[in-house]
Figure (cartoon, helix red, strand yellow):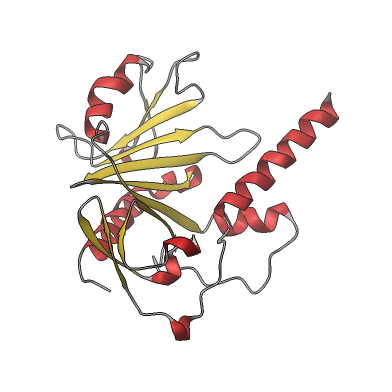
Length: 218
């Protein structure tokens, strides 16, 4: 039984590493600095080196794009010279990345409405203070968000400026998901739960990435 559990843990880690690892290596000399891509009627100017899927590396209208940026520099990650055969090497690379999916929401419920009307149905009634004003509220066992926590931070008396839904640390490292809506698209940021110790920097990084990709900033 222990052997089976260990094999399942290794398989899960390998699968996560595969999903997080870039699937192509662009040639910087052949790429423009930005690609104009329209998603859900919203124009983004995206560095091609940040696009994880080769098929998405083209200008024009698309349903979604999947991106990766180094943290805290927020620059497109450098292509690896080789793929490390060990799981720890893949995990270390993933811990240095912030992943972003931009997708047409097709009229789905907004992150703000979900926070106000859906999450409260499944949350424990008590909250716990975390680092630097961050507040944690656990989701109940047996709920659709079992083994996850809702993390919120901001100024007292104001709507939370930082919201993340995070899996708990277990056999695999915990991860966090933060969402925001921009016109016809939803932006979904994913990053390691360990970054919550610097959640203000993470919140600022998401703001900068949103402005940089949606505007004309480098």
